Length: 272
Image (tube, rainbow, N blue to C red; front, side, top):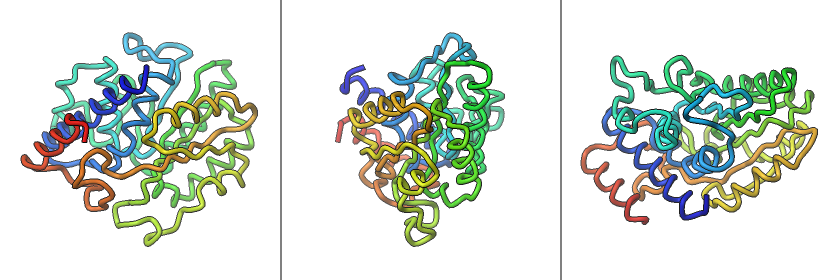
């Protein structure tokens, strides 16, 4: 895909996020919007996947360790053709397969049920190790929130991945600087992120998480790095694309009302 096409895909993902959260009346817009560009590159360019065969042998896998951003992954899967886009509007409703956090038992394309922060990262490390043992060429990608790095299990997994030299594993840290209680620096400092992963033996790449060329280049660097897992520290804006949500911790976990939804969709589709 060229950058124009990727932007269109990311916009479709963002609109899907807003529409599904508005229909649900609850959910997490801020951290879903911030990863939309990264997820667009993963699903529409980087990963070897097949919506017609979600369990294809040798496929690449994406684990959303920051599971509260499920609306972004659902919207991407719908845009990629895994299921009808209309189903997104059933998010968080009784009887829907689209729960507030990813559930691998019900939704095609979801590789791991996540939500308890840090555990998705550990599962991704296990999947990468399993691929290595099975001779499976598939790569494993995992998206973490920056506030998630406050979980100790993250660093146990980071140590394990480095020890086993899992160069088929790529972690992406969504560094938007905010979490549910405010700014990371006020709650519990997580920086310097790249230096911490480097100390654990990881290959590190830092990018603008809204620049398609930089994201694409980071994945290329990860593929070229042998013998070490790679972490991509992506500088992002929470609520990206919607003016009144951008860089606002208050939009971590609440849905837009009717007027806010209308404004958000107008801004997104108008290419603000």
